[in-house]
Image (cartoon, rainbow, N blue to C red; front, side):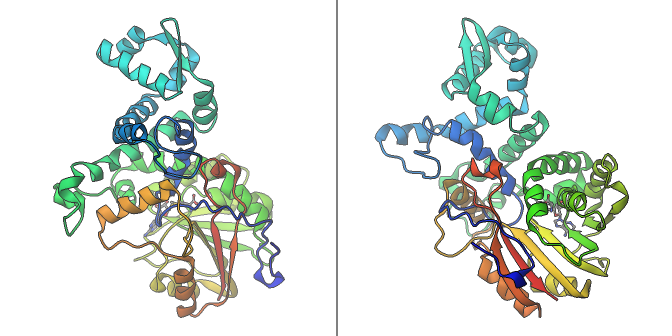
Length: 394
Ligand SMILES: C[S@@+](CC[C@H](N)C(=O)[O-])C[C@H]1O[C@@H](n2cnc3c(N)ncnc32)[C@H](O)[C@@H]1O
């Protein structure tokens, strides 16, 4: 599909796949775990890459127990088991001693991972399978996988005793006397977590950032504001391909601190700064030719109006996000994410492209154009269609 020249954004091709993406706000990166889920698809639940159909009585019986298989995989990732065994295949006895797990339980755990196709046993010795080497070890660092598994684990309680809590008129977390995890608050309260999150997303969003740098037309842009820019992964990619560009990343202080460390190790360090602010409450800097919001999930009229005043007269706002379109067929993963959100907030609805467009128009932006970015390769594995790009002129 060609792009109208007036859009100012270049798009190579629209991925017409019917497989859709995930819910609003953050959490999207969890979709990338689909890579591993595909590996275990035929054992657990998927038939094919995107469908959730359970076809037989045996499928249904297996599916009822799949939460424990998922926990077994998550625990292996948090223990960095695949990397440990890749370096030095070991027996169940040795793994049990090293990880302080009762012997027989450890054997059952490793055998389950064999059943999932992620480990291979040769005699008494366990090693990662070729699937685990490609889809886990070859995909991300142990730190990133460990963080992703931890986040998934922290969300398990929303499904605990669901038969009791599904009727609760408010959050099922509250019904259990628990607090739903809020990733921004978690990072405000815990600098170490902010570091892990920010480095994880720096890795996960690398391919997306490269794709944006290849596809966004930054003609006439010399000052960029990367709102909720996190590590600065997108800004850094844009700076690499635009030598006269400078960027300001606005994010919470604990994230900015890590972003500065990451940027310091790059050749773009002198052209990027990180300013700590809560952009929904605090003032934000002004005088930008372009403001970018990539995977931030906060798209209110109030914020759009505030951003408009931070733009130069010919400035543009670009939103990059996996927004839904009505009638889009949703993957199991997205359906699970939506259901999880509804457990936290019973009235939860997803934000569509049309709704964000309307809010931009309401906030007095002009020439709102919509594009779909070609899917970065790593997302394809989980059936994720490339994000929507919305561009609006001040
Ligand atoms: C999912 S991350 C995306 C980061 C980056 N744009 C990227 O694509 O890698 C969203 C970021 O927005 C930041 N954020 C969310 N709400 C914020 C707020 N009210 N003020 C400042 N930063 C915020 C988070 O701290 C997080 O770093």
